[in-house]
Amino acid sequence: MPDDKVEVVLYTYAGPQPGFLLPEDTYDSSAVLCVEFGSFEFEIGNESGHAAMGDIVFCPPGVLFKRKSPGEIAFHMILFNLFTQGEPSLLKPQSAKNSISDLVRLSSTYTYLRKLQHQPGATRPITSMTNHLVKDLLFLCQQERAATEIYKKPTDPLMQQAVGYIYRNVFSEISMQEIANRLGIKQPQLTRRFQAAYGVVPVEFVTRLRLEEAKKLLLQTDDTLETIALRCGYENGSYLSRIFSTKIGTSPSLFRKNYRV
Image (cartoon, rainbow, N blue to C red; front, side, top):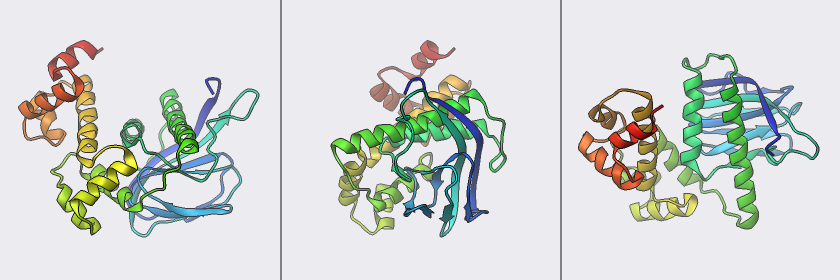
């Protein structure tokens, strides 16, 4: 796997928009479609299913890719070639739908991909970083496949909806009770089912996403802690500082001082 080379042919981020412009297509290269907002139905060869946030849908070259979204959707569309020496690559997905449980890692990769394309819907030049990030997506698929060989855990569609809502509103005020109400379940059920699906309770998931963003802003901007706190969904810098120090093990100021290049 270390010798595997990913060469991205096309990358685009689109949406939110009312469905797909092309309901079906066939590509000369491998394709992955990663949804961040909304959901879609797909049909690839003999496989069909439903995909939402957390799912990476893979289509081999020369195979008709049908997709339909019931409403607004935002997604990453990637065409790539995978080169390997000798045996078949472990990075090549073995099925159309690949559900990723490490959503913090997945969300971080999506964020970096979007930053490489500043204008949604516009195709940008491919860079070595794009290749690296797409290889990371394939690595997540491979890791998930290896884990499911040990313990097969079914996907919980309702929790995928919860993840999608959290992801869209993570930097705003989020109420777990409101999410539970939207899903038609009790809040304790939300907590229990979310942890069963992703190995973390929803409140902790929100905290991890917010702190990942805080770390990026500390290293990539000169924003004050107050500004960063507001951008990450916290009321003030003091509260962010307490959470940051508890979870990361160092204060925001020391983190910026020690890790900024």
